[in-house]
Image (cartoon, rainbow, N blue to C red; front, side):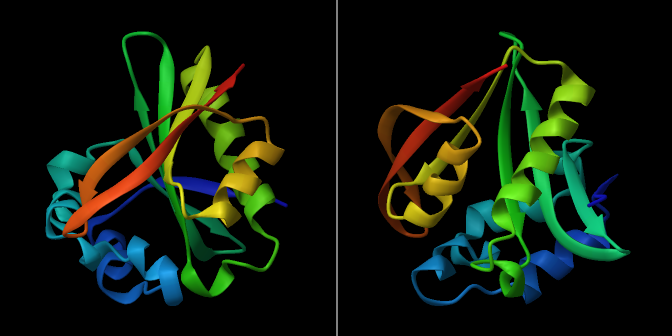
Amino acid sequence: MSYKFDIMTQEQAEDIAYKWHYNGVYAFYDMEADKEDLTEFLDQEERADSYYIVSKDNEMIGFFCFQLDECNSVDIGLGMKPELTGKGLGNEFLQAGLDYAGKTYTPDKLTLSVATFNKRAIKVYEKVGFYPVKTFMQSTNGSHFEFVKMEKNL
């Protein structure tokens, strides 16, 4: 399956921020759930050239954020369109992002952080070779939540 990566436009950021709403506990990932995250996501200068829209067959299906650090590691953030989650598409979508990051940034390793309650995502990350390295508490969405940082060596 062919995925296309393009720099996120302001219109696309606003569409994601205000129209993408997840069900149940996954509403945690709604952009509007944390005002600070929402403000950052909607700021074109903050997003710069690190946020990409992913499309397949000319339909926007998700996004990735790639942050290269001084240790030649790329930290990944991602989101899939709500109506596509939980349908077994995560592995392929994630692998497309990992392939893109590998070709674009040629990092030594990839990292990501995920809320520990999100067992569904953690399972997908582990299937493609990520492993947990530490847990930490993070303030977000008006409270404190436990996250796990995961890595994948390349």
